[in-house]
Amino acid sequence: MSGVNQGANQGALSGYRILDLTGVVLGPYATQILGDYGADVIKVEPPNGDIMRHAGPMQHPGMGHIFINANRNKRSIVLDLKKPRDHAALLKLCEGADVLTFNIRPGSMARLGLSYEALQKINPRLIYCGAYGYSEGGPYSDFPAYDDLIQGAACIPWLMTQSGSTEPRYVPATFADRVTALNMVHAVMAAIIARDKKGGTGLGQSVEVPMFECLLQFVLGEHLGGETWQPPVTASLGQEMGNMGHSRMLSPNRKPYKTSNGYVCALMYNDAHWRGFLELVGEGERFTQDARFTTQSARIAHIDELYAFVQTKLLLQTSEHWLKLLVAHDIPVMPMMKLPDLLTDPHLAATGGWVDVAHPYEGKLRQLRPPVRMSATPTAISRPAPRLGEHTAEILQEIGMVL
Image 1 (cartoon, rainbow, N blue to C red):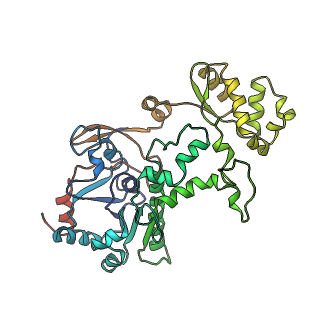
Image 2 (image 1 turned 45 degrees about the horizontal axis):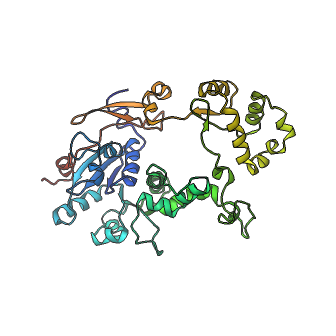
Image 3 (image 1 turned 90 degrees about the horizontal axis):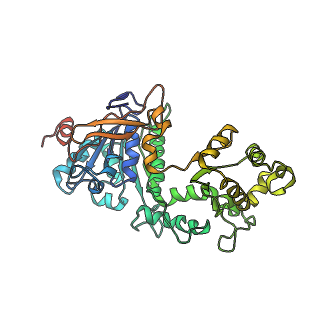
């Protein structure tokens, strides 16, 4: 697939206008997804632009790769909100917008004259969505928040040590930002539905999407453990862990299996998988005779031992051998991919996963297509990431203002 306008103006959010005051990764990733669904996203940037414009590699100043990969399907307008005329332009844009997103503290928005109360008077239908580090009202509320800090606060580096890492490590991706961004997307959509559905309020609302709490919900889905109950149910994961943690997630042997010439990612999860694998390695009797293998509860209790057992078997043959054999017996397995492998991945090739986008200034760009497919209201790449202020004149003209 190449080019843009694949299903442009037919998306589920076609006709909705979103003012995007966010920067870096969290907010831009969320609003890009909303743009993929067809919304008209206006990216409001300061004179120096979103800071991620300047993170290389890049071909041209202000068009770094991270920015390009989080800001398609948007128009860019430059406004210095400390200048009265530019501030007035934003207020004028708010009059006809459906959603305003931001990722600075609410107090900072208020100091800019952009509090929810102020904008509600201008447009009662406006959905005012802020994504920032921590919920309002607590001792962390005014703390600065970046992905690494939120990962640390949500126990990610510590959990790495509990699962066998020799030292605390962050997930090597903007994990907290992107998990929160996905929460931001569905929060905006829920607020739109609440406003516009039959019998809905017809009014906007203020929406808070805090990074810390969003990532905690993600992490504690597995790791709240025995503390799910009050009083707690006793667990046996070690003194430091207390009653919390999920043994399978924390097993030091939960990692890609080394083979004789590389690694594969295999997972024997249910009875059929374990019975089939044990038969393949000539030890089928273990499923009924070795109590560690017989039930799901027993397997979880002894999961580190079972992972170690599998490792001894997979080390005896090549990755190619195991991939072919396990697939043939319906046992979950995938190769351990390296980043360059994705460029020639046969599944992405067959499903149109990579899209060549013609950018008027950057040349041909490689992009991943929007992952969600919808039969009646298709997602689309309708425009590539904009240059700084590329649409300022166009957008001002739409609201009756000129440069």
